[in-house]
Length: 202
Ligand code: AR6
Image (cartoon, rainbow, N blue to C red; front, side, top):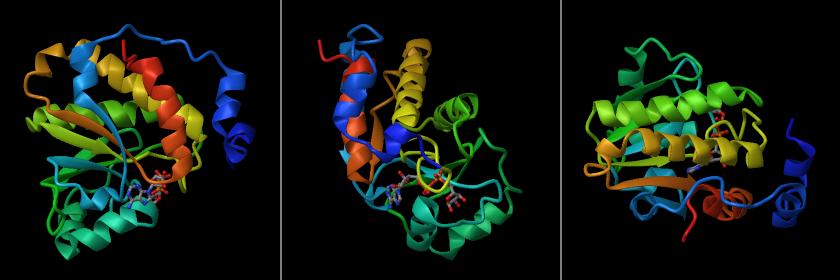
């Protein structure tokens, strides 16, 4: 079940409950490569979208179901051969009938387990670099069926990405874009508030 603040989400709850001061310095190079969009992730024409999968990798509900429906049966066939995926890990497949080239399937934790959610984001970014991909769009891993409190999950997603960029500035020339693809209005509100803490505009 979701945390109290999450069930009663309003931007004011975040403002009341914590400081919104930037946690990192301004970095124009990073800011140029980061975007927030509200969209159906299956529509994005990009190198890779990140699926919030389960350990079987054989499909399910939520964004996973939407991705498998739009990709067609070829995706499930390739997933069969991957023999599942541990929580916190990520594996890549083709995009099949999707407009994206690849799907990175990651498995987030059930409930609030920050080290495993951090690992899911990190491993997805690692897979991106292993395959030399230029653009990636994350869904809001674990914040649906798996019940990770959404504000806390937003902090983990943005902090992990910011730290990863700090440690991989050698990849910046290759990297075109990291997109956070929110679907529901509450996640959009959360990310709009948290973005300037991790990617301050000035
Ligand atoms: N595009 C972008 N985001 C979406 C879409 C979409 N088409 N549809 C849903 N979301 P969830 P989880 C958002 O439940 O919590 C599956 O059954 C949604 O609003 O898809 O990691 C798997 O097989 C939410 O913010 O993933 C696993 O068993 C976010 O995607 C389990 O659910 C993630 O919600 C994984 O649970």
